[in-house]
Amino acid sequence: IAKLSMIPVSCLLEVVLDNMRYSRGTKLSILVVLLGVGVCTVTDVSVNAKGFVAAIIAVWSTSLQQY
Image (cartoon, one colour):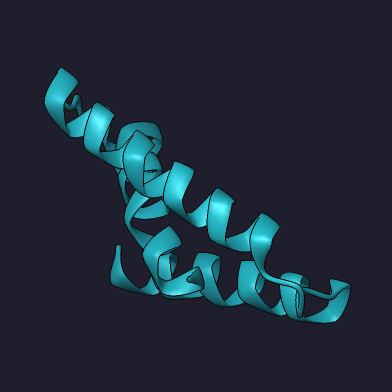
């Protein structure tokens, strides 16, 4: 689930750091990914604080490295 979050984070980095613009279709696709990640996160009974923080750190560090 956290790996899917890398796509929107990478796009966010490109928008913030490179002033890149995305089409409406791309933005809607990213929104669908975010909604899916949100639903999976909320319905997963094994989410805990340590794992959530580790996932956030992993997503941001990997996205920054790929950027």
